[in-house]
Image 1 (cartoon, rainbow, N blue to C red):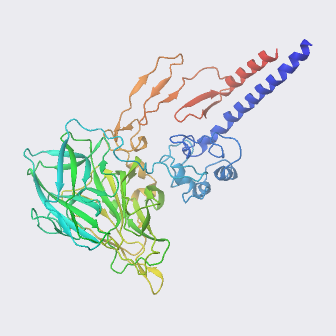
Image 2 (image 1 turned 180 degrees about the vertical axis):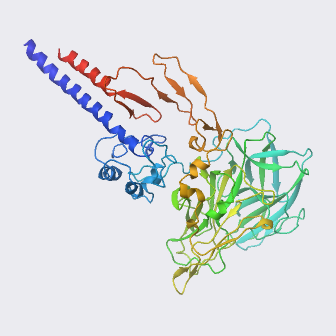
Image 3 (image 1 turned 30 degrees about the vertical axis):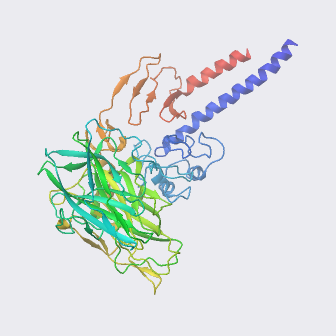
Length: 596
């Protein structure tokens, strides 16, 4: 009886232990596949914010179960990272496996550091990492102790007739009693008549006269809605009233030279009620004399007014136009820039916008995507981790329109019934020269040319791009796709390496910094190294920019086989070194003790 009871007890326990041994063996074997693909242990989990997909080739994030499409292709390639596997799009999401795993040029070699982080999962259809937060830019705003406020509004109300579209501007001199350099950290819309104010833009005319001419301190006037000479301070569209900058970024408002600045306020009125209206809206700036590490800049991508011969055809459920900021334009940059927010702008026919990021002729990511754009709900969006744009990169902005409600072609222009395709991107650090203080303030061209209603096709035209102010305009002409004009570093596959930042240099993530540095507060810095003596293992903890610690256990001498292998434990920022010999010996001892 006793022996029988013992047998009945041992069998389940033995089965459990054998199952445990088998599962440990599987975990111990398959994680080394992670080292055979770029960023294999840090592939994002699309269903878990900040999480990783440990079993990259499986439909289960933890591994096991069936293979996903990438896993099938990986197996077909002999479990090796090959050029063919890199160039595949396993999950059919429009991005190659190489782009998703941080090896867009398919040059990665096992054991080396990939050229960039994993953007998304190559076997699970998902959105790329680090796109928009779709939350207010002011959610984490921390006010300064020395904030000051400056309000700029129309001096007298604008009296508008029943016409649908109006543009009104006013140039105002603001004098500062004590000339000094300030940083704007936030601005707020001061709406007088919410029924008609569609969007506002505030410009700063420091060294240049407005393209409208010298109309300073002469009250409101009719304007075109296009400013080609003054710098953009900020823009507001229907949406949240306040727009804030990250803690380490400020927009420069420089009163230090003369003590006064000419500001130009521009307002677009959409009088859909078609009745006489009145408005005296404006913008309030929040300023501080405590300067922040980075000065913000703005670049307008896309097109404000189309070529006069360009038409968006009527009765189209979906029609897209693209515009390129080409490599020859970004080559004017003397350093990388980091885009931290974007603000799309179209009119009534606009339905969606995306700016695609190309390097060396290959798409490596996106700088903002809006698939459900609304004319009456426009707002800026944060980008989780600032996106680095290198000299020689190309940015392609595509807008999608629905013209089913129109019987006639739609032309580009300022009227509400016209169309625009703009993506205002904010970035740091500020780039410019003495002759052109706002390099990259505008980067536009034409890709598709104009639509010919008779032929029913888009007729190609030469590509044109320019940089403002108009006193330093540079124009370029192209006969072919500007994406083919790649940067010099593409030939050596050294673009990322060529632009690594030194200490105190601008950055978005750790990978933007030279070896031994981390990105903290958008600046490269030496990491803080602390020793944790609160446990028996004397683990060493190294701080990183995400506030998560990466822990490694000190080596032991229990490995009798001399076979070391790093295994992903499923934690987002931890790895544990398992010794096969020690692990197997431990479980054999446990099994023997239970059986005996």
